[in-house]
Image (cartoon, rainbow, N blue to C red):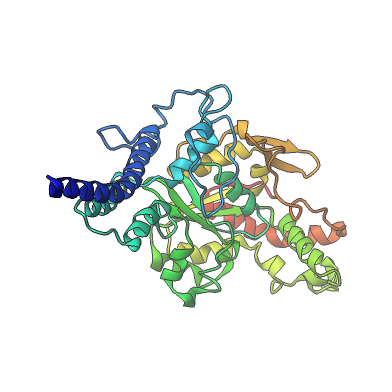
Length: 399
């Protein structure tokens, strides 16, 4: 009898020690189950992370989400996901959608947790690294992929505005900084480049933008070597205005820069334009496009008007979303025109104290350029513009 009581107490003490670890992993499993039920993963049939058809809140796309950074955001709690009136908080929905794994990844997570839990149930000692590995899986949702779409140009055409507008879309994941892989860092290798990309889930589009790609001779072949199916976006703007804007940016960094008219002419007395000056050379769009068309079909490129991106941002964003195969989420209700800056801004996101506009470096006042200089530069660009219209099948109205 005494031995029996002693044995029972020993077993009970061992059970208490094991139960603490068991409770820990049981809580993880319960949390995982509740988390995925809240986001639609309890359904028996596979489906996308979020389903536009099953979200019944008619205002689900009315709120502009805070622009995503390339590292994503932490999944909010259920209380954060519901607004003050009980409506679904779209900004939280986007964050969750971008961090959730697919069903196969969920299965892997549960398997790892179950493995450690089984060790405890069998009386084995769970190793610290097993616990850490199981938990760390939650921070690695999605996979890093090569970009399916790249904004390749042009400098001072409106590429930053386009990227910021695109990042509203829940199915777009983009690198914030310009990687400059295909023009400056190609020797680092494709694996280095892929590791710069944000993690994405099935159905999401990985993007980056580096405007200098469009004028880099080696870039088309290098992008083609990565993937011939890469979608390319070129934001173009009146080359005369673009050249002045380019000069203005450089002047802000180097106040001692010669005047625009001194730089634009190779020979001022004869009125010859200096095409070696980058501010001028970038605007010869037809020449640069020929280089890209040697590797990519015209159907693989989308030409966005920098002017229409200002006057009709929703219209241009509709074309971009169609080109990328995305649902038209970004519409005119997301924008308002900022009279001070002279370009559209995103309306105030929920939870933010002010609207989202581009930084101080955008919308600078241009210096005065003599009209005759601008007229001479416009005459220079005219034949190149007409050829560009013919090549793209679009009249951008710069003449």
